[in-house]
Amino acid sequence: MRFFFIKFLLLVLLLSPALAGGSKPGFTFKIYMQAGLGTTPNQTVPMALRDPDQTISVNKFAVLGEKHVASLLRLPDGGTLVTMTETGSKILETETTNRMGAIMVVLCNGRLIYAPEVDSAIRSGKLLLPPGLIEEDYTLFKRYAVKREKQ
View 1 (cartoon, one colour):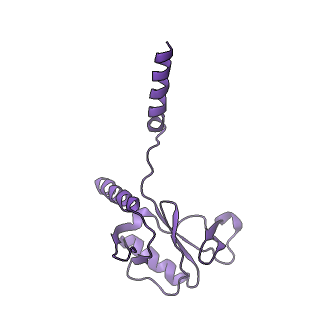
View 2: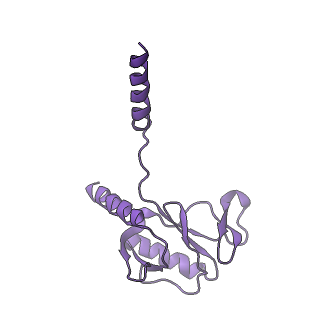
View 3: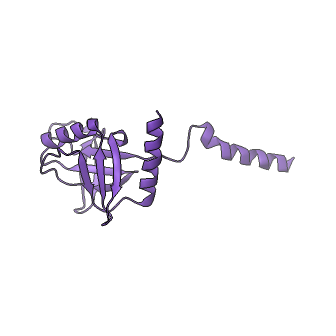
């Protein structure tokens, strides 16, 4: 009886993430913009940055997400060239044109990758990120891209 209970418990523990809809997290890529003057506190969240260490308020919802990423290209120096989809390119251009001087926060799989101050509009639909993405990020993106193509 005890052996049966242990087998049942192991089965429940192994299947519970699948039954709950849980699985290994997929690829996430988010770009948030620093909240502008006049933005109410319930529309923002604090974001801790480094270099320099500071906390800023960003809009609660990302302006760009993983669905806007067309490709990731690892560069020899460890950086990454992110190419946006057509829709993502238009959003990126609009946001960087209208939010000159604001900080653009780039997160990949929950990690802060880059937080530059916008000093010019990005019209090319491409972002050059410094080193920070890891092998797992590229692997997760490839899986995400294949899954997205099938939909």
